[in-house]
Image (tube, rainbow, N blue to C red; front, side, top):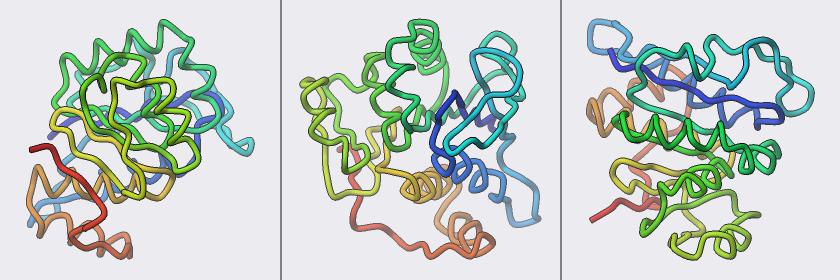
Length: 201
């Protein structure tokens, strides 16, 4: 069972982290056994306030989290603060060096870029932040009008609901199309091979 860590922080976008959380929790094998152990991680213990005032309590801190195979970094207004948080950026960099896949949803890609994970790679982000990301990170090829970009060890997605598409893509990449389709059906989420996506050569 792979460990999936969902990073959370104040003012994180709700569906950016809840969508991937639900997707990975819903993924099972043919016998109904869960394929992923999913948990939330934050810098500090205790309750934090996500977007729109939703109160969330992380299960682990950066210091106490178990081994991480897949990291999900959400977006939201809070990324504008976290991008200048060296503790968070250093943690993302360290986890990425040890994990199988590092992912971002929406403006979470800014944190991956700040950690140096998108240098020389293709990536995407929320449509409203494409120009800003291109300006801030000229060494990253920022794609638009696309749901997700698979750059191998790093996978980024566009905003909010696109994180679900990206998560289903990772399920398919790791366990096959049938497993991804079964997961989407359980969630009652329309899902099909996505032409609006990019994969590394």
